[in-house]
Length: 370
Image (cartoon, rainbow, N blue to C red; front, side, top):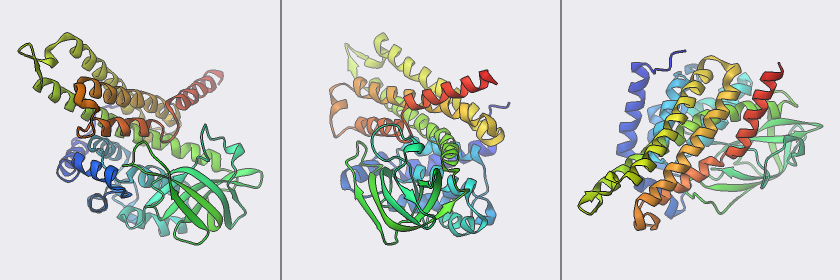
């Protein structure tokens, strides 16, 4: 197993960092959070022109035809900039679901538009508070029509298509829904991180088509979420790295007793703890990126470990950022709360860390029993 990215892959990452440094300063995230927009449209257009939305989409379907090793590095830079765009919803979830389960006609219809940014996708799984159990799914699909409600659904207002987990007969299926059609009502939910807004979607006999085999929805959704967990984990790692960098800059620039406060042992130890958490997350992330690209049967365990470690790292980095900024860390004017909101939001986006810990235990028990 080679855990070193190639020069070409590092170039992709550096290009992404340079672009986002110039085009996606933290003021972009703040503007969406304070202004109520669904996302930054100009940034979305720029990201589409860079080819990132179709990084793993085959060239025959309008994509860049790169690979998951490139995509995880792009995700890391998206997280580092706190980019206020529906990248995870559209790329990690909707596009991935269609790539894995779509028919040839569905791929030809949706993938080119998703890759170009013309169409934004989302993934509708949850139906309220608590862990989602596919066996208790209330949204129903009769083969052509969809009924019920999903919440919270990320980026649903901006999205033009949704992949929905729905009950069909005695099983569960994945369903594709055109969100611009009749029988669909979208309403905004109060979100802890308004730069990544959440919505409730009501389906009232909305036209829909099955994605993948009937009755295989739970299995397909689990596979999509595993892969999204790796990519979102890299976003979290990028956010944690940026939070630590800014915390270091702030503490190096504040003085007490004639010394930078960063030179005091108490702060050194706390920043070292954050650094160690990030390195643990990166170590798990390297394994997960390799599994995502080369070893499908190891993605489950790798996704769980990365998701847990990355969530822990980002949350700790954001919490310590507020503390070490001192009194100003709690104010609206400083950017600490942007990182704190994003850390907490991403930690719960596709299941809480505790849910992923339980999934990891199940994977390990299954492997031991075998």
